[in-house]
Image (cartoon, rainbow, N blue to C red):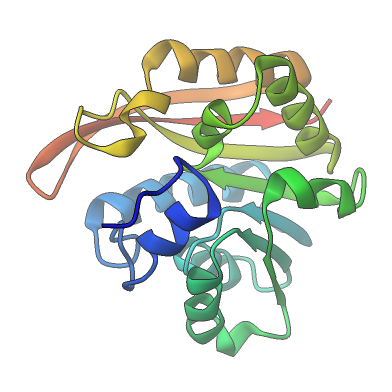
Length: 216
């Protein structure tokens, strides 16, 4: 079996060698998580014109964003070319409103405009930063991410906590690490909400939090 460097491009290409590896389209657990994030956006920013999605995978959440906010333009960034190829197929009906970018967000972020997006959504990928960047570099990356949001705009993120051993992401989803991301983001934008859920997916219970911040 090919040895994969943790969280390198090869890891995600290998994951997306087969469609929907994390069941983002098929799992009621994932769909509920998406809906909760959408509800926050609808409540706080019901008519966003420009949306940034970091880590769009094969476009499950992107599709919901396009359907929910019909006047929006969406920039969706994904590191895996396998995932982007399927996202293009899944989102073909909205190709005039969705820009799919195959890139590593840690490298692409500087190419995005400052104070530009009404909403940034970052679901289940923020914790990968912890395996790739130093603490200082993570804070700098989060600061630059927030800088892309307009004043009064939203940053919404969902993060699983304490994934069980045997799942590769268990090492980067430890509660103290996830708490650190929240503290960092809270110093950069005003916290709106922080909700915790424990729900079942594929006969196993998982805990996750959904956070929302407003750009000062």
